[in-house]
Length: 270
Image 1 (cartoon, rainbow, N blue to C red):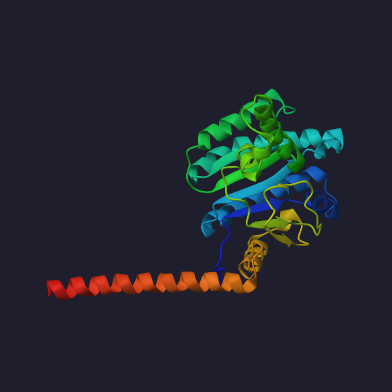
Image 2: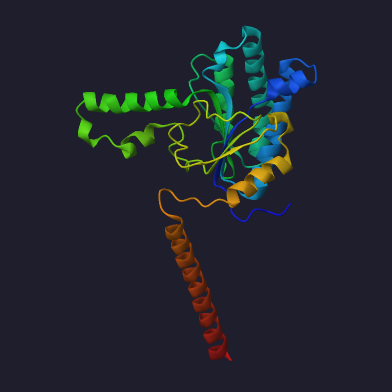
């Protein structure tokens, strides 16, 4: 498969289908989650190769606490062991790791492991890998609005001045570009309370492939789908085409000017 010509800066993925993958093989559900960790490694590697700047993975939603107690406990153990095993490898590959979500229900040991992993990789400049754990889009908005409300109560902000630009700095991903591409595996076609604010203009891509089977070909197919789309942001297709043509002309003009400068230097030195 050819390399896509247009690469998203930020990809967000709901990694769905681990349990069904295990069930189809008569395996316990935790086996599907372990296989899902292998899929994470593959996708992180491809993002690094393709020059994608940020990858956000929905690992555990705030609603997932409603699952059987035994499964939740196994998921927490898997999360901690994955962090312990992978953090050093991520650091060696210049990947910056961040975990977003409400950490207060996590064990002290898991919270400490998260902090250590983030601290180890915080100065890396390659891919930013964001793990959303005990995260929900409504929770994200609520905690941001709570900060804004305190500023109003303290008299530091007028209610009439509240705008998107006031709220956004308090959201979990405020310092990253908003996702260009959203992927959900397993055939489900829902957003499921994930990055509600951030995906307002994100391109959505759904695939029937279960997450543990999401391989290089599946990811490349999603990237090709993204590359084939025209992102309008409320404008018409004609407006977007005009903007692109203008940028191309400016690029060609710069190349011609640079070539002329080089030619003058060659002739003058000759």
